[in-house]
Amino acid sequence: MTTKVLLPPKEPVKALGRKLDEMRERGVYQAARSICAREGALVEHLFGSSRSLPQVRSRHLFWWELKDRGWTYKEIAELCERDWQTIRYGVRRACRDLGMPRGAAKEAA
Figure 1: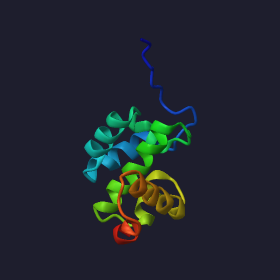
Figure 2: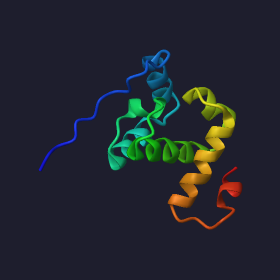
Figure 3: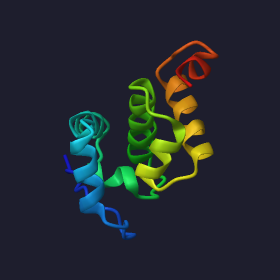
Figure 4: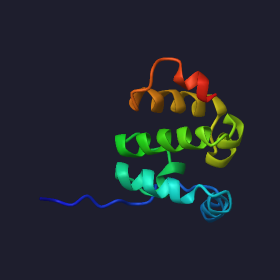
């Protein structure tokens, strides 16, 4: 059995340390860690652009978690350095992956 080594994202993220500190201050760092651990990614991957399935699922589920906590798409987009429409798509995708009924993403919005 081979073990998969997780590496931080290749592309530099602007002030990654500050992003992680902001997550801690806003009380979402532990949720990010648990989501990433469950999906097989690192917290740093939430800010990367990799399209590997564990990293994409981690990003989408993290965005959904923030939206569920009452964050706006704009706030999530600013934290993750993404466009708000990308965040909205990811939240809808997470709803679908979680088996929520169609329209659940609109209720989360």
